[in-house]
Image (cartoon, rainbow, N blue to C red; front, side, top):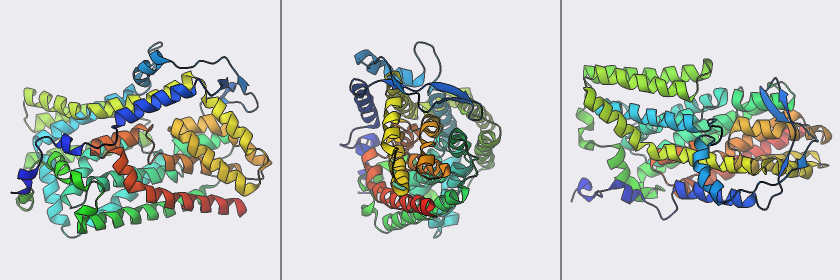
Length: 482
């Protein structure tokens, strides 16, 4: 019996895990946070507009308890909807991210209909034969550059469906593909240098120039990137030599059927037609324009979504797909990523419950109280772990910066610690947690696209998390002593 004959009729069945799905995990977290609003006292800091940050920030010393607003059964059921938009004011939350994902799925569906991606993968593998391993450091470095300069996060969702087939064709597994993107961009954010959504906002909120402490952050970036590249390359090499050592070994046949839809035997004879080459050029230019728009023109999800929508139309016309095949392919592609879009709303719903229950400031006030009077090393390391804990509830780097830095950064003055070290501890903690954070849409979305269950991702990444934690602890401790 051939390998294809052994493939399951429904790949999704083979990909199933006894571990709960992302939807169940996220809805369970919504229930947990709602329960906490009945236990943790409600409280608030006063807010004042900070012109440098561009939004209201908490005022130190103004915390006071307020009337509780515990979240009940109806609030829990509303949370997934509220994750997309406020059902009372209609203010958008994560609806823009969800729409971007659907437009991206439609764009990929049209590209797949041209056959250009599958043929291009075979052609690339033919030229990379024997040197596939070097894709890992090159691509991880590029994603890290995006992370450290402009906080590349949600934008990475566009790359999973493109890169994973290439990685599988090279003989690695889906986890390797997910790691290249998620860990690559994640370590860039962890070691943010000029990232306006993390370092710059946090430094402004802390009342210091964002260049303060930049040398230490470069050390975190370069050292962390080398650690991550070495870890992913070692894993990929081990998996290629012995596929049974993959953390998703049981899902390999199903992954191949989902991501590599054509026979592997055609790889060496594949050649691109002129139309397919033009489609691939437009495909690449679309991503280049997206990166340019986000990094220099202030684009966000709506403009990125419209870019992919327009590019899908252009590619469909050039490939002469016809109106019915073009629209059908677009809808089918959007349908493939519908589950990812739903995950985004669920993840945001957790934050909504916490905000409505008014427990975020109470948690922050407890952290403020815990840090008082500590010696230097104890202060900076406890600061790191406090930010780790808060990152699970506030995964947004800018949101966590605005919430915590105005309150926690001034405490560094009493501990004789530079405020720049507090900023570094915050961003490294947030970056570390967001490699696994189930409340972070980028994590659950990327894993959903890559068809990697959350428990399998944890099985892969937990040793790397330990290594990075030790590395960060050493770096911020040395920064405190020097």
